[in-house]
Image 1 (tube, rainbow, N blue to C red):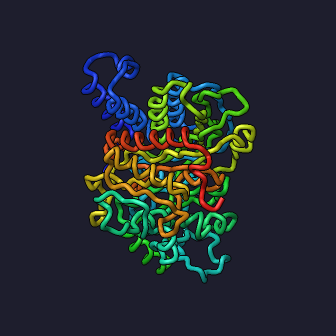
Image 2: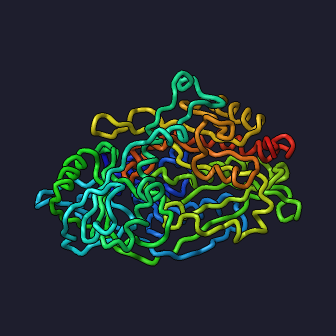
Length: 497
């Protein structure tokens, strides 16, 4: 995967801004009215210059501050911050900084990335014998060893879970093909260490010196992988690294021969403060007991530019709805921006319980995520932009009116490479992202996401972003927001409820 250092990103950002705005003051450039596509691009260029947005870090702070300003400028009322603190583990995201390295008997091995929240070493690393791990390895053997284990590709049982073999609608460019398993495989491997194998639980207090996961991925695809999901809070206490399939072949052989290695992972822990940000775009009954809410939601944290940029999408949706007089808005929109997507113990803070008085009045949900992303594909050992867009997935609850409205909007805005999916009807894959809140709450709703070809890496940046795709996705979700605002309950009643 091609990427730039943070310094180069900032330099690139400034060059683009000067080309865009000439010699005028950059502060004024950001505040002056601009065409929509230009404004969207400038927002993302700024976000990209700060790097990954992990809850509480500088990049996250700058991003959420910009979102807050735009929410205020667009008339959002009763803006509320629900703060919390947590211990944020971090290291450099750049391999050239040499904060994470691996050598086998003095020979360097290329490392794809680090295992977030695994642990850390001193400046000289840890030295120990490699042990190749399998399910029959006695746990008492791993003490004092550097453990090596393979993460295999997507097994058939999970293919049935993730594959899209049916759909409610597909644009013509997708209609004749069956969705491949590349995203499912990506998702499975990145989830493997903490969700499926639960290796974090296995390694904790084991006495192992370190751990190395061999990913069944090309070097380009494995580069910058960020551990997900971080289900359990806290640090494992065993420093971990990821290597790709090429380095993995060499490493596996060394482990089977019991060679010695040095593993270094320099990291820090910082007490970080983050917050949920919520507020209201008033409808005609705002402030009255009979008012009902449409929840418009996204995450604010993620390892790359479009994971998560849903907040920018929400701003653009709100801008369009603001063109409609309040007297014609049948419901109030409740916006909630969630910062706990990539933090340990993810979703351990239940915002809905904190605000039970509001939650009980939510009658529908729209989740907006991963917008404007161009597609990455494997080309041999490289992982590069393919020149086309990531596939867009519009998820809907099981109601034909909801489905028909989504199809109508997709066709209206002439978006390409797009599916309309109703997972509850079977064969259409799982709900991905926050859209499944509608399922959990058993209310009408929609979600938007993409095939997330670069989703779990810290590397995809502004070079992989399309303002045009972003705005088509926003236009679709605006239509669906307005549909939910005006539809009566019987019209969008979910099947089986």
